[in-house]
Structures are given as structure tokens and as C-alpha cells.
Image 1 (tube, rainbow, N blue to C red):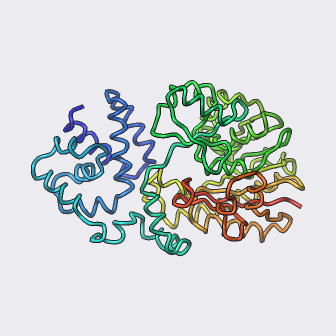
Image 2 (cartoon, rainbow, N blue to C red):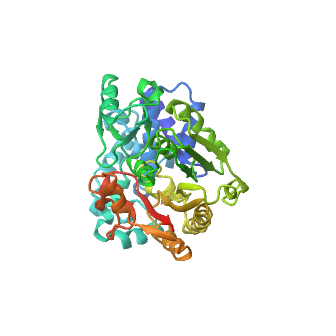
Image 3 (tube, rainbow, N blue to C red):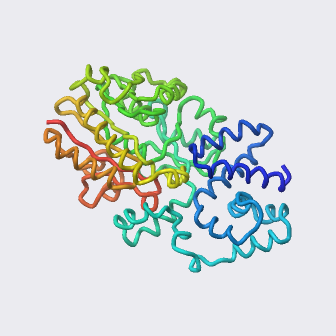
Length: 420
């Protein structure tokens, strides 16, 4: 596509994602369905441009005020994910001079909000948690996330899967913490790889893999993934169980569970039972009360730990939204706890960075449920041979606390209990 046409198309996509009416990935996918003439390279440039604008929205809007023409075009120019020479061939001479002036602005001369590119309501709680590390986190959240894969250990060992990927032209190295993980260079077309089509590997962030590992599900057990969604953790748990026992994948969205179907078929697992429920107090939950050896509650949350992948979330969430989520999290955790049998394990997890959704919810549950004994997560992970387990946890070792700038994963939290 000619540079001018590509810039015009990028401007239209930027306009759509900045309406913030729907998740950015859904907007981008729909846009590409409408623009079927676009090739893979053009799609990659357009998507990365849209996400760059979402990541650095305050900075680009600040700089765009000095330009002229349509706002979305100025923003697309600033975030354009291609060499500057290519972009400049699509610009008028005044636009080129303006873009050069923007590129020359020193970070020190910018307002603070244009350096961290986070909404004001989110800055204070993150500063309170991280202190001097706040800037490092903010910078990490502006970078694209790496591509992590989980090896399906039911089918392959990790080293064998890495060699298989190498033979298919994909370089992959072991993730530092998860024993199941491989980190891939670049963005290969996974759907075209035999290793992917045969279920040998699945896309899953290393942090998400650690949540499934923490559950430590065993052969022959009764296990529940209470908020299974599209089933990434469900598949990891099922493989850890060696496709034995019974693994329930509960979710209130039948549509999300439908997405598990093709992945489940590839995986070779036969112990997974997807169940759509109306709510956390569904009768099907009551009938299983006290029968589960392990329960994972990957609770609905703000998703702010995934801002490298989903930068629109920081503009689509509000403090009021978070408080509504906290109420749901507490209700879901209390209801799911009824499934756990005496001696069984309960794990509560989110992909949020906020203490309100994490330590506060876990603390309230512990206070209300004295029959659940907290388990020190650092000790559990060390027992599972996770490298440097203590560094993945809160200072007291009580909870998992993963940060993009420290660990290279998405931001995750997890607490664990054993029922008396």
C-alpha cells in the first residue's frame, strides 16, 4: 500500500480505537475484517500504530496540539509503527517539519503525565506501592509484551518443543521462572506452525502459567477453574493432571467457553468439563460443594497488569469500576470457597496491579473464613522448583506479586489457602 494510503487508513483506525467504546483488540479485528485487501505487513503496522497511540495517549495529545489538520491524523503520525523515512514520504513539508520538532522534544521538558502516560487516578496507588520503582513500571508498561508459549507437557517436554519450533524456523528460549514456558523472538505466524496446530504449544504469559502451577493439581483429583474464560489456565492445569481426574471449567460466559473448544481439541486432554453457569451461586456449584481438591479463582478484574497488551484498559477503567469489581471479587471468592473439601487448596488470583483487588480482597476473605489457613506462596513455589521463588512474592512471602518491570511478565497477584 502507498504510504499516503496507509497513513490515511491508520488515521481511521486510530479514530475508532480512541472512541474507547469497545476493547481495542475487538475494534482492530473488526476493522481488519472490513479491510480485507490489507496484507500481513500492513495489518501489523496499523495495529502497532493504534496500540502506540493508546500507550502514549497523553504524550501524543500534548504534542498534537501544536499541529494542524485532523486530530487522528496527527496522532497516527506520532505513533506510526514504521521507519520515519517511509512515513515522511506521505507528508507535506509543513507536516514533516512539525514531526521533526515533536521528535526533538526532550522528555525532561514534558509534563509528568506525558512521561508516565497513566491516568491520574492510577498514579497515586502505584506510587504508594512502588516508591522509586514507579518510573520503571511506567516505562515497562509502555513496551510491547513478549510472546510467551506454554509447552503442553502431556505431549512434549520443554526442550523437545523448543527444538521442534527451531526446526520450523522459530527461535524460543526457556522462560526464567515457569518450567513450562518458552519465550519467542518476534511475532511468528503461530497458526501456521505444526507445533501449534498439534497442541504442542499454546500462547500464555509466563505469569499466567505460574498461577496454574501454584494450584499444584495432581493426577486423579477433582479440580475447578472457577472463572475459566477461554481456558488458558484450564489447559495448563489439565496437562499437569496428566488428563486424569475431573477438571471443571466454570464461567458465566458460554461464548468465552466456546473459545475453549478448539484449544481443548488440540490439547489432547479428556478430563476437562466446560460448564456455563448463571452466577457464582448457581445450583450446579452448590451440588459440588465440599468435593474439590483444588479450586482456582482467576477473578474478573481491572486487567491493569496487562497494559502492555491492552493499553486501552487504563483509559476505559475508572475508580468506580474498580470498586464494583472488588465487590464481585469478594462474592465470587466466598462462593467458590464452598467447593473446597477439607484439606483442599484454594487459590485467588487477578491480573491487576491494585492492592484493592488483591491484598485487600484476600485479607477480607481470610478474616471472614477462619477455616481457611493461608499458605505461604513463596514456600509453595520453592517446593515446585520455581527459580528465585521469593523474588516473585510479597516481602513476607505470603502472596505472589509479579511486576512487568521486575519479572518481565504481566502483572499478577495470587494468594492461597488450605481448608481445615
